[in-house]
Length: 319
Image 1 (cartoon, helix red, strand yellow):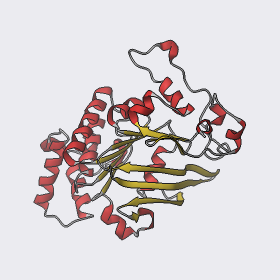
Image 2 (cartoon, helix red, strand yellow; image 1 turned 90 degrees about the vertical axis):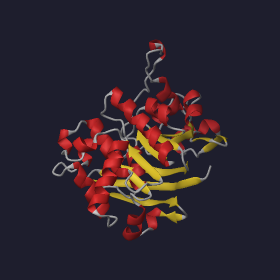
Image 3 (cartoon, helix red, strand yellow; image 1 turned 120 degrees about the vertical axis):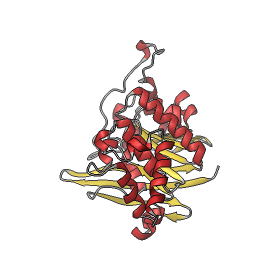
């Protein structure tokens, strides 16, 4: 498959009163066209920072130190704001985390469609209304009720679907979603997952989504990128990685998953706590919690080693 987006040595930090938070530290990965990629890891591991750095939507107290995000032969990080506006939403769309806070509470849903389209194109009002009705229907909501409601009148699942509908206005090639199923009940999560599967098939979308829920990643993604403390520690086809995890952190994540059929005695959490990204450990950032720690883990940051042509692991065990 053809690579549609390539991220190379991406480094981004947050500047806070206490110092510098190294939330994205040399991240590299490729996304293939018409696939679903999941970025997984614990809370505060840097997952959202990666996609915000990729799309240049980081908050004001952040800074991209170096790296490349290559799309159609262009490095997005070097484009002007005018050039970026041609790509954002029309070719690469982002559905941000927390649907509850992403919609303007003072305007109706239809006005969100007007504002989004006016920012990029000069459509007639009746064209905008027709497009909004089509997209709201596509995400299985009733346009008559939804479009003329305020955000506070909708449930969390409805807001999430409204955001997905908004992201599809210009038929983007890549749709990036940050925690699309968080804060939703199990049934609504299932509806969102099925909706994304249908949209991918209908629009030939390339999906990239962030989640802390391995079960969601297993259900939806073709490829998985496991993030720990600002680094991608393992990547590969989702089924392969979850069936036979190689990195000790990935093994810990898989072993901590609970299900109706799992043996409770075999479920184990990962000992210790994630490191502070203000002062992360030298060498491998996972070594303080790793059951296989060696002296070189404390001194030297592991490279990405190829297990096979599709799988990479950042661990000294595979040198």
